[in-house]
Structures are given as structure tokens and as C-alpha cells.
Image (cartoon, rainbow, N blue to C red; front, side, top):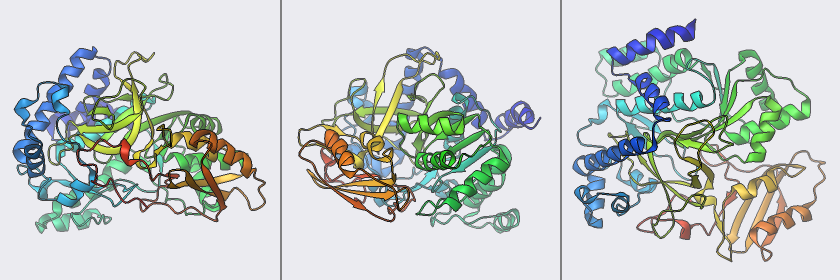
Length: 497
């Protein structure tokens, strides 16, 4: 009954009578996935041109950047012209925030502020105009639809962090109804941001999305923490378990080791981190559920998601994002070629993201999906900063290291650190103090990928330090820079260590 009222009354009325159009956009996205390719691509291209013109006219950062590159929006007639626009980085946006990167026709006090996770560096404060928020909400609903789930389905979210609305200072206090009303009637300078915090935490998460957020795991991934996750899942019985792939993998190992039976969810939604086919199979077996992937970020929303028939590949949401797969020389990759993923957000006007180096590598495919959707498919192979360039020039994404190490008997967690092109530290945490490990076999397997000349130095440690976001960089490269395609290669991607 609750979902019926949401779908048939509350959300349709909200879309019709208020500025909250997320339900309308969601229904459009669901239909558009099956549209003829050319019709959808034409709409996508028009959105690209619109956001470029807007950024040039209203965002000083882009206007200066394009002037230095000698490109004007009126010169862009095709995709080759579009690639003349310089690639931008998170570091540039952070350094120019807020005055240079927020559109001058979108008053900042009426925007929603939020933080990115900062997986490979300092977090980035973002601003979103209200319509952008609606599109991002629609993109999340679309990803759940591809899983066979629905609006209002109960969700348990297991993750080190979460993109949250915040104040312009970056703080995200828990604002209740009385505090919000005090700020509203007092015409507080941050009352609009307080509104977004209040609505997200007290209304959207609890009433619309029916979500639960257990706290992150502690660094030692203790049995107590994992047991607490099991207790939440067993008591809440969510339709969707959404979370960081490493967390769900460790939880699946805990379930297997202790012969635990849990209520199987409708779907497992892996987000905010890398997973491999072997990880997904193992997680699905232990949870007795289908496993799906979603890809995106706080900046862009969910721009790609897998369905039950896509074999782990993800359907790109082509009216939410224009996604390029680019080689270091600036030229586009062919289907199936590993490339740098460059993003253009098509519905973000308050703070545009145009040819944005998101920090991931992957490939796209033109093969049709058996589900009948006509969108391009893609895979993410790892973070750009984790990509290793071998001595023979081969690019090795972190996914190729993942199963060799994480799935090895006796290893709970690992980290491969490249100190020099052929020198690596291999840190590992044992499953148990008495775990028997064949280190020679592990090193041989790694050398088969990294090259026979790789000098691998194994080291047993008590824990692996997480990034500031709480996520884990399992591979750290010192050779990834030549794989980038920024116009100014000396511009750092983020903090290396």
C-alpha cells in the first residue's frame, strides 16, 4: 500500500505541482533506454551543446579555459570539435571554487552543497541546482529499476562514507524540524542548505527511500562489526543491499565462514568501488541474490548500471552523461579498448562538469544487450591512479590484480604499492594469525601479470590504512601519468600517497 501511494499519488502530484520533477525524469529515463539509438544520441548531443554554451556564457572558469584553448562554442559542430575542449580535473575545480566555477546566473545561497568522497585525494565541495538534484535522484531510481527493484523498496547501505548535502563550510550537521524552522523564519544565510540536509535525512532517506545506514567498518574489519551488519540485515530484511564492494565481499566471507543464513534481498547493488566478476559471483552465492553494479559519483549521479542480462556490463545513462573513452593522445578508443573515462554532465548547470577527468579507466561495447535496451554498455577496470604501466608498455588496471590477491587463501586484505617501474611492495593482512600462506605462489601469479622482471617484496601487516574517505586503494601506481589525456599533463590528478 505504501509503494502504491508513492507511485500513484504522491510522486506524480509532486512532479506536477512542485519543482520536484525526479519522478517525471525517472519515467523518461526508463522509456529512453529503449529508444532508437539515433534519436537518443541526437537528444544527447543537443544537451552537450546546451551545457557548453551555458558554461561559456556564465562560468568564468570555462570561459577562460576555452579562450586559452582557442575554442568557442559556436565552433563545435561534431564530436571531433568537442574534443578540442580541454579536459578538466578535480584539482582545478577545487582551486577555483566557488567564484570561478559556479554559474553567475545561479545564486549560490539557493544551491545544494555536498561533498565528494575524496577517494584519491582531498574531497571536493560541489553545488547542485534544484533540477540537477531531480535528475540525480531519477538516475538512482533508474539503477534500481534495472535490478528489478522499485521506488520505496527498503535499502540497507553499507559504505565507508556517503555523499551528503552540507553547508558551504563543508559541515553536515543533523538538522531536525525545529532547527530548520528556526533557520527558515530567522532568514538564516544557510537556510536553503539546511532545507536540503533536513529533507535528505529526515524525509527522503527514511520515508521515500526507506534506507538504513549502519556505521562504517573499523580498520581491522572485526567480527563484531560484521556481526552488527548481519543483525541489521536480519532485522530490517531489506529488498536492496547497497554498498562498497569490498565491504560486501568481506561480509560474504563472514557469512560463509560462520554458516550464517540471512533473508535474501531482491538485489545487491555494488557502488563506489571496484569489483571483479569473481568477487560478484562469490557475493551473490553467499547472499543468494543477484548482484548488480552501478557507476557514477556525487558530481554526476549514477551514469551507468547493470541489468539482469548484461553479464556485469553496465548500461550508460546517455541522457544524464556524455561519456568518452579517450587515449592519452586525445583520440577516442575503439570498443573493448582500455581508456581514460572522461565525463560531461548533461543536467548540471549550477556547477557544470564538462570533459571532466573522473579518475577511472574502462572500456565500452557496442554489442546489444539481450534485455533490449539500446544504450551502450561499459565496464570500469579500476582507478586511473591505480593503473600500472609495465615495462613493455602494457597498461594493467587494478582489476587484474584484485582476484590474484584478494581471492588467495589466507589473505584478508592486501595492498600492492609500486615504488619504481619494476619494484613493488606487497602488503597483506592474514585472515587469521595462523593462516598458512604460499607467498612464492602469490608472487609468481603477480609476476605473470606485472612481468617476469618485477621485484615483489611481500610484507605481513596488521592492517591496511584507508584513504581519507574510508575507502581502500588496493593498488598504488607510480607510472599512471602517461595514460592521462589532460591538456596540461603536469596538472596533478590528486594526492598520490
